[in-house]
Length: 174
Length: 174
DNA sequence: GCGTATGTTCAAAAAATATTGAAACATCAG
DNA sequence: CTGATGTTTCAATATTTTTTGAACATACGC
Image 1 (tube, rainbow over the protein chains, first blue to last red):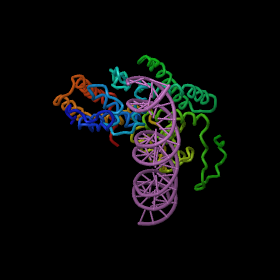
Image 2: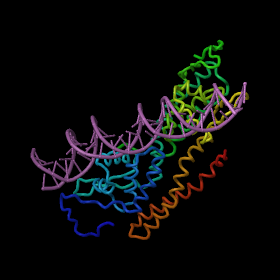
Image 3: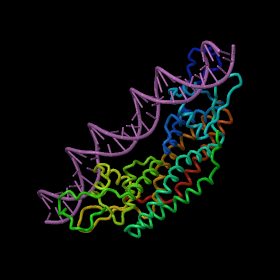
Image 4: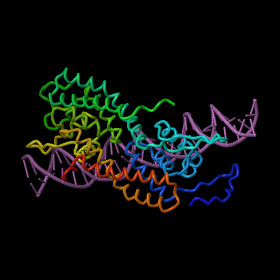
């Protein structure tokens, strides 16, 4: 579907008119959207990642916007998210001020980072809460069974908290 | 805060007026809500589970509604969800037609079930898609790098698909 | 330095999701 | 059987999340 390298009439400033996604690209996007959905990552973000993932070369802002048919705002925010998660990288072609994007080499590592960024804060916030809760339960009247449950919950939380950081070093500062 | 066993004026039919959550119960609820949020489980469901989790005895429909201050509809749907996930069990007291609820013994097992119910269908749906996509990529012009990526994706999907069922036997039919 | 190509921000619109409540339904104690 | 109790259903409503687009910033090639 990509117009064979006919000299694009888009010299300088006219609308380049981007090719819509091929059937396979669209199907891959649906795959990523489904998976992303599980972790609450919005459709637009998954679509962007999918496009980069299926592209042989790095892709620039306008191409993303054009081929996916989404707004500038969404592209910008989506790239910000992916960038913050360390899931995409940008190259800058020499004489151009335009950035071109591609997926980070290891999808697996990206996923771990993503997971961590969702789970870790929750675990951290929870630690003191669970301490208070367990103490409260022990202090006042409370069935032994409930105390047992709560104690186990706290134990798990602590364990998860110490295990998580081992999975991968935190992304270095930018 | 629970009214000491004074003879409840609620004989038969007057509004029982339930105690609001204690500070610790509320804090535990927030914990469950946060964790549930990661998987896209709604607040009301997490609150219900939390209440059962912190209760020494099984809790009935009206108590859930009363103490959490939520609508009948939400309680019913929430219990349905938890029941379907096998996260909650009901007992029926002898001379009463009312059901009383408590959390399934193993929270860990419940979580695995929940995870599976979210992830497995996505993986299953994706399998044929990924096959088509990889084939498509191989057929037409496509950079070797992209083909490699897609192939790996399919490999992972297949692996996850065969690993998941091993984690726990599927919940038996009701 | 200027002016424009390139991105970002953010308030408002749209879409998706969750909750409510009243009516329908089911069941069992009498 | 029957009626009151207990639960589910579902259309309407409320809430939350996502997307849009136009105004605003930035910086780079000229």
